[in-house]
Image (cartoon, rainbow, N blue to C red; front, side, top):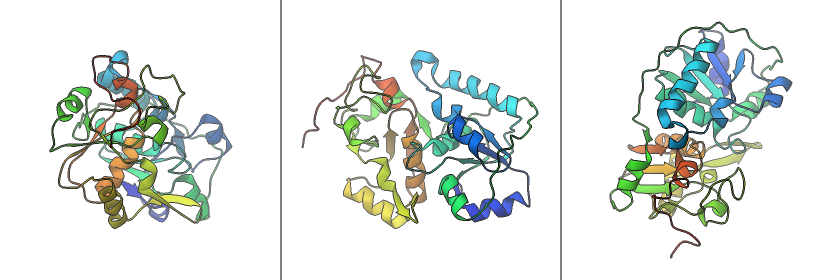
Length: 283
């Protein structure tokens, strides 16, 4: 266990020694079918879209403050967030890490390997829904890892900052607007001067389960894309999920300065004053 991920064996051991809040980010039907013992369903971690058009980060803070108050989560709690598998949920458990850390939750961990790793280890699941008691949640914003569109604009022509697009290839070349659909976003393309490093490349499959690659492997993948730990990295995707996955991967590999543009393309594409590149990237 480090500041970002927890292995299934570590979680199983912790369940017997201290109070934990376990959050399930999967679709409602999947949660109803089976989930980790005492897991609370919090689908909004994946679905909530944060853009300036809907109030931006302040509105997101208010939204999750209400939800976390309802389930009784406290900033001092130890929280574990999980999804089914880390390559099919668009990084939703990592997005949970990003949101909760921004709100000031001190100890947040992503379950490495997700539910599939838990099941592979032979650990139990349940259909029981835990009871929760409302407790007012007071956010203490920690914005070190999240940046805004204005900060990305300022970085476009700054050679000392690496803007990294971690979306899928069709989005990168402007053939698709988002995972939500071809025309979900009003513009297709990418942020000027961005480098492309698809988020899937941070993971490898073992025993049919996706895991983060080793720090050395992650560094090698980054080097192949021209991305170095020596310069700050600004990440974007569609809505801050895949960026959250890559954020954790880069931090595990020792990158000292990594920032998550949480509004990402969903926000950027809707502001026609912001520059974009369209079509195939110039080589």
